[in-house]
Length: 232
Length: 79
Image 1: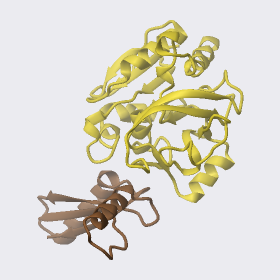
Image 2: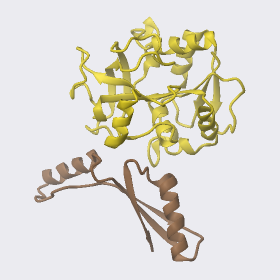
Image 3: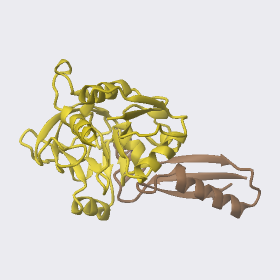
Image 4: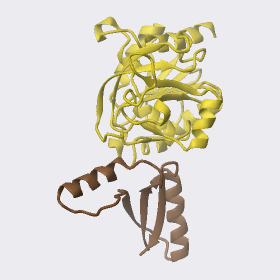
């Protein structure tokens, strides 16, 4: 798997992401700075990692979405490329129009730094291939603006087309209000594009990929991607 | 020409910041605050001298960057 990680000023989770991709695929991803205007040839996957790009000025992700490299990333996605966005990366994707909706301030106004539980809503995608639908796993989260919002028509379309990737759930795997700490619409934690090749989510599966981190709950995401591109 | 762009959370979109400000006002003894919405104001100094043109430019800027029209509405004022 040939992967690239995009680094913006203020990105701070790129090394965690590199570790996860390297561990799953055995191959070192390339790091690309926001000023680059083009992606290297033959990339399988582009990853927008977490952080606080451009100090969250204006809106989280709004400045990064306008940087030169994002034009190349949008073109890459339009041509059928695979793109993963985590946390600030998800915010950037939304601001760049790669995925629908918006991410509001957490309903409690608190920055949430804790583990959450996610339920896999859509299996058999490049990002969730090694999970079954309904599988639950632990994922750390760390964000102030992760409250997913979209109008009812968009939410209905996402659900109707089965494009919700992950939901926040409790220990019993139920999508309760208490499990939905940031207040996201319909407990949505992550969504997919219609071609299933673009995925954005708020929690950090890349931060649970080694027993030394306290677990490997997030590893299936990266192994799913790695397997897809071994076969290709 | 100066333009002022008012960006507000859309009606129906949860505004936890506004809610928190409302609660704080109540805590200070200001009764009768029914609702608080918090947005932002962006001031632009534009080279354009024609007010109608300037307004159009600022609105274009708001649509493309200054506001996220999924969650926010905006209004441009030429000053």
